[in-house]
Image (cartoon, rainbow, N blue to C red):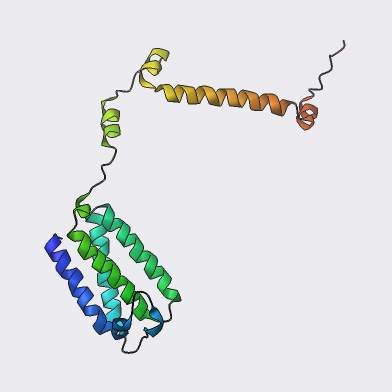
Length: 183
């Protein structure tokens, strides 16, 4: 879906919301005390929610990180809506998400794409599997940090073994009492 179509559909849903949940027009910045389900049209609201969810999901999957974050916020609000005193409140909060989506479409932030770590994939594709893994091959292809990690793990395992060998329970199981055997 191109930006013009997405913007038009978002605006259509925003404009349609007060007709589905008329009391949201009385709402002042998340003061939902005056919002009721009077005049609420459940069948139209269901279709509206499906359209809003589909549109935000579509933008999230094709529009970059900002839309993915917005879609996550939309779903969080939808989950919290079960605790609201009226379904109209969710319509109002969803309108806020749709309005933000329209603003993001016009923003340069919407075009930011976080690059994936493709250089690792390319490096792995260039690496040929050796017929025999040798010490020289490992020295050439394994990073120094991995060597230090492996050495640290070996030292930790040895020290843990020394410490555990001093436990009386293990000494009795394995017969390690520290006494010399007499013939």
